[in-house]
Amino acid sequence: MKHALHARQRSITTQICMVIIGLVAGTVLLCWFLNTTFLEQYYSKLKADQLVNGFETVNWAAKQGKLSDNETDVQLDRLCDNGNIELLIISSDGTVIRSTSNDNINLINRFMDVLFGAASDKARHEVLSTDNYSVLLVTDHRMSSEYLVLWGTLDDGNLIMMRTALESIRESVNIANRFLAYIGICGILISTIIVILVTQRITRPIRQLTDISRQMTELDFTAKYEEGGSIKEIELLGQHMNQLSKTLERAIGELKTANNELKSDIEKKEQIDEMRKEFLSNVSHELKTPLALIQGYAEGLQECINDDEQSRDFYCEVIMDEAGKMNQMVQKLLTLNHLEFGKDAVTIDRFDITELIRGVVDNSSLLLQQNEIQLSFHEDPAYVWGDEFQIEEVITNYLSNAIHYAGGEKQIRIFYTDREDVLRVSVYNTGSSIPEEDVDKIWDKFYKVDKARTREYGGSGIGLSIVRAIMESHHRDCGVSNQPDGVEFWMELDKNAVARTDKE
Image 1 (cartoon, rainbow, N blue to C red):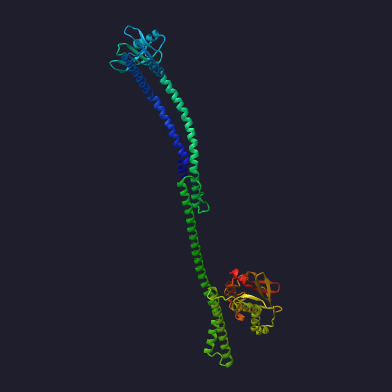
Image 2 (tube, rainbow, N blue to C red):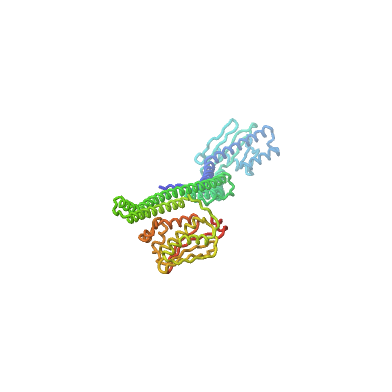
């Protein structure tokens, strides 16, 4: 169906060419038909009128007695020569008064033969008749020729006869038709060339607009109409097409933006739902063990399983310890929630990271001594930009992990690495490395590589999630890498205000 439709459709150039060629060819054919059908009759009437006008001229001259005047001679000669007319005027006694032939006898015989010849050879048809003259159409079948013959009597009593051949009109019609055919062919060729040249100026911008509209249907708005044509309406159409392209491009861009925002909102909602489900599952899992311990020891106290004071104190210590762990986990969850949803404002200041680390190390000195861990760190001042309280939380989490997982030689080393505009702060501890499959997961909430050991020192699996949230709020990186004899946790902070401003 579609191919059939395209087959019936033609280009503007083809249609205009067909119309113009049809008009030219139709005009030529119409002229040929009119020439063939009516030209001979029209010519015969004109010839008959010439004969009648000639008779009137001669009759007027005869009445005025001027047949022999020079002026009359000139008029008659012009009439006969221009109209190809043979003229003969004879008196009642047979004397030739006027003749267009030097052989008067032959001319008289021809006239007599035309007027009174044998019926088998001549056919006569009266064209016009009055009291003074008659006009006959005489056909000579033997010679295949026709004549118009006027004969009559002048007012002075003399006889006049005039004859003109009609054969020339047929030859003229044939010549005119042949010439018209040549002119028609040349006219068709010339008009075709002109039409193609003219229509090219019209169809070129139309084809350009067609290509632009096709690209617009494919949501490609890069093509624009190039102005410079001479047709006002097409130029206006091109301008409007460009405006339409810009409008559609802007509208579709806004629609895509809105669609992307909608997708982002949907994804965020789905992510929040997943986070909520995961949060509830992890919290219930993490609270199940301390709640069971609290419930068990509380029931033991209630039932007085051990009445001695030392046992009751032990039960109470276990209950208080588990309650403290639960409270600590809840506080960390609140902190993480504030960080993830941007509820904690980040206050960026310049501070000495060495001084901050020294404070954290002093607070952990007891744990270091209890675990017999040797710690060394960079003592020179190093100034960075960030939220001092949040960065302290990061250092505290890194150092806490290093203390609890230090093994082998039990050494912890805190050092700096200059990296262009940032300072990398690393906390390294000897001991077992983190399994490669767990490296990317340790930043997830409640994820624990060694659940038994984490439970032993009271870890909740939230600390590193807090670290990642803090560093994301600072728009800086953090990470972990396994070393040959230990693990290195690191974070990066801006060293100068210019880098900080460019980053924001």
